[in-house]
Figure 1 (cartoon, rainbow, N blue to C red):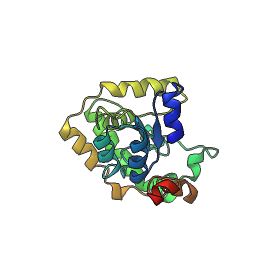
Figure 2: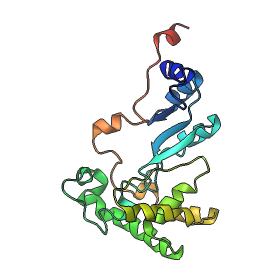
Figure 3: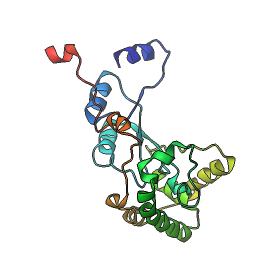
Figure 4: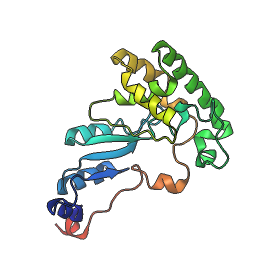
Length: 206
């Protein structure tokens, strides 16, 4: 962070962001130089940042950039209405494994049902839910197809009130999601819950 701060001061970098950082790392980094944005996985079926990370970001004025806001394509129909290609990394993802995807399909069906109520597609409703989490939330759905890009943009037209958001959240209980969000144990150890930047020597001696 000290080096990044220098780059900002030299005009080479305008903003500084972090990804998958622990609460302690966020606080310590922000104390060196203000953090503009934090990238974290956040979607209807991955909400573990809501209890600690989201309140911390709002306390410090840090924007939140959710990656995989469509649940790695799940709410776009992958594994449900579309078969996951064997060459895709998702074919090895725990939530898309045969024993889990059958359970998770029920979650998709609930959101699909609510999407009809809101006159939009299933991915649009799932993305709209993330968009409605706050003005400081800017999700980054990825796609390689123009039709999916157009559909994602359409999520901006889906208007949800507090009751709608609560209803959508309640049909996807976190404990009902089958499988962990990490592809491998190595990925898990690199996430915010496990990876914490150790204090430097100067802070230890002070």
